[in-house]
Every structure is written in C-alpha cells, then in structure tokens.
Image (cartoon, rainbow over all chains, first blue to last red; front, side):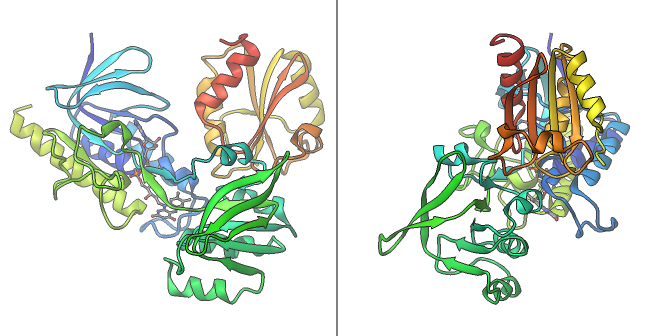
Length: 309
Length: 116
Ligand SMILES: Cc1cc2nc3c(=O)[nH]c(=O)nc-3n(C[C@H](O)[C@H](O)[C@H](O)COP(=O)(O)OP(=O)(O)OC[C@H]3O[C@@H](n4cnc5c(N)ncnc54)[C@H](O)[C@@H]3O)c2cc1C
C-alpha cells in the first residue's frame, strides 16, 4: 500500500527545506524527496555572505541548519531517493520510487533547483578531474604557475578568473559573446589584470589531451577561425540549467525549461506548485529560494484547507 | 580537519592497519570543499547498504596525505577529492573530482560484488 502524505516536496535545497519548515510547523504530513545530497546547490558554496541574519558561513552550514529545522518540525526527509515514475494529474498525486515503493500526496511542491551547465561533450567527461574543473576554490592550487582557461562570461566566470589569476601563470577567458554579462566593476578588474587575456565570440568544440587536458579547441563564431588554447586546466562556468526534465509535458515550461508559476507559485496543474531556481524568475539566490519555499508552502496549506483536508 | 561522519585516516599506522584489516576499502582524500562534501555524504549514506566495505576519509592537507598524493595512479589528477578503492590491500581504482552516487555504486558493485 502506498504511504500517504499531505504534501510531497521534490528537492531538498533551500526552497524545499523552507517549504518543509512551514508545512511541518502547520502539522501537514510532509515528505521531502531528494535525488541527491540534501542542501542542493548551497553545498557548492564555500562561503555565503549575503544570507541576512547569518554572518559569513558555508552553504553547507546553512543547509544543515535548515535540514535540522525541517526535521525538528516533523518532516520526513529522504536523500538519494530516485523518483522512477509519477502521476501529477492524479488525485492524490502518485509517485513510484526507485526501490519500488509508492507514495501519494494531496499536493506537490517541485523544488528541484538547477545544476551547473556542462558542454555535454564526451571529451569534457574524459578530462573532469584531469584538467577540467567546476570549482576554482577547490582545484585552483593544482595549477600554480600553469596556464589555464576559464570558459564563461558571467559574474561567476569572471570572479573565478580573478581568483585563479592568483595561482595560474596565464588565464585565457573564452566566451561566446563579444561582451560580458557581469557587473561593471568585475569586468573592469578582469580587464586590468595583466595575467588575463580574452578569446571572445567562441564556441568550444573539443577538449584535447592524453592522460591530462592539454588544449581547448574553439572556433570564432563569425570568422570560423579555429583556436587551440594550450592549457593545463580549464574551469567551466557557463550558467545553470533547471532540473525540470521529469516535468516536461506535464506542467507548463518556458523555452528555457523553467516551470511557469502564478503569484501563489501554482503551476498550471491543480495541486502542483513550484519553488526556487527551477521556476521562471529573474534572480536565483538562497534568499529568493527561501522566499519561494515560504510562499509555495502557505499556498499549499490554503489549497488543502479549501479541499477540506 | 575533516568534519564528517566517517572515520578519518590520520596516520601511516592507521592507513596500514586499515588495509590489513579490511578486504574492501573506499578512501576519500579531500578537503571540506564543495566537490568533496557530496562524496563524503554519499559514502556515509552507503555504509548500511555495503557492510562489506570500509568507508574512510583523509584530510588532503593532513599528515597522512602523502600516502595518497605520491601514488602514480593520481599523478594526472587535478580535481578534489581523490577517491581510492582498495581490494586485499591493493589499489584497484582511483577517481578524481566530485562523483555521483551512481558512479560510486557502480564502482563498488564492479570491484566488490563482481558486477553487482
Ligand atoms: C557555486 C555556487 C555558489 C552560490 N553562492 C550563492 C551565494 O553566495 N548566495 C546566494 O544567495 N546564492 C548562491 N548561490 C545560488 C543558490 O545556491 C541557489 O539559488 C539556491 O540553492 C537555489 O535553491 P533551490 O532549493 O531552488 O535549488 P537547489 O539548491 O538546486 O536544490 C534542488 C535540490 O533538488 C534535488 N533534485 C533535483 N532533481 C530532483 C528530482 N527529480 N527529484 C528529487 N530531487 C531532485 C537536487 O538534488 C537538490 O538537492 C550559489 C550557487 C552556486 C552553484
């Protein structure tokens, strides 16, 4: 027999955990399912300095506290739990889990966040940890006095390029456009750094090397000129993609794959809400995810009351 | 200093006795960083599912880390953590950088359960 809950929250990042805190406090029987590590992208953040009320701390500390709070209010939380199948249009909503068991819920909050975008090239997979990295703070010191590339042109890419220039002999920023999409002060700092050079309007074609990465091959998008940048390392910061794959064809998505919601964070499927980075919105931060989790939980509670539960 | 729920390997003696006392060992050598934390977390989560495997971690900047850093198998590694799998005291697999749960379980199944 399927175990029944008032609310099933998919995703245990800041949005899902906050929803859990509000739902738990309201005595709603709540299950939070996470396909991976609880904490979501916050775990990728060494230091968070812009979460109000908390002085600079690690993303993990913030998410561990949220986890404790949600558990403390009675939420059941399961990490590393795959959802093998779901029916979000059914009443109640049905989920088949990876271990074959079934759970049902009166309402669902999708808070599955996002993941760093990758190129999806086979050669990228081959050199992860052997030259390709997604974390400057973690792996920067492996490239002391070595030439590296940074791919991307947003705030993260440029901030990391500046941090990496402290270790590396030379940093080549490879970017797809002819301009950066970052804060003016970061662009100014990057442009003024003598170790940093720029390869603009590039499409990355391939990563080459033997046991380790040796070259980033890219092509100029207008002239077709191919460049092979000789490097020991390449740091990739090319944005994020929403984890909305399992909901394609079920709830309405934007062309970028973000879930469309109304002001109460309801989707176009009754009883299904979305919160955090997975939904269409302008700013993606822990504070905005937490705000979304709150709104979604309060909207769900109202819809449950209307349903007479 | 690692702050995880795993047992830490902090000296050459504890490293040697670990390999002597356990047939199957998964050792994750890293820091408290964003690429390492998920791997420690996965290992803690897998302890009950793989009772035949000893799951340990080691501080990449700690006194025993030279035992890992000097291995020829990690010479080309540039991403933390370095994760090592031992069978009967011998290194049989090593990975660099963050791993997903399914990457870890596929290694555990292949190395310690003959393909699972
Ligand atoms: C390197 C880095 C640094 C950052 N630094 C800051 C900062 O300093 N300050 C700040 O405010 N923000 C920062 N952010 C952004 C912030 O972390 C995110 O905006 C926030 O974590 C979004 O929260 P979320 O709950 O919507 O999603 P996420 O944090 O992405 O969590 C989503 C969760 O859902 C799970 N999941 C995915 N798919 C499924 C599925 N199908 N079923 C079940 N579970 C699933 C994932 O495993 C994950 O745990 C940073 C992000 C990164 C990557």
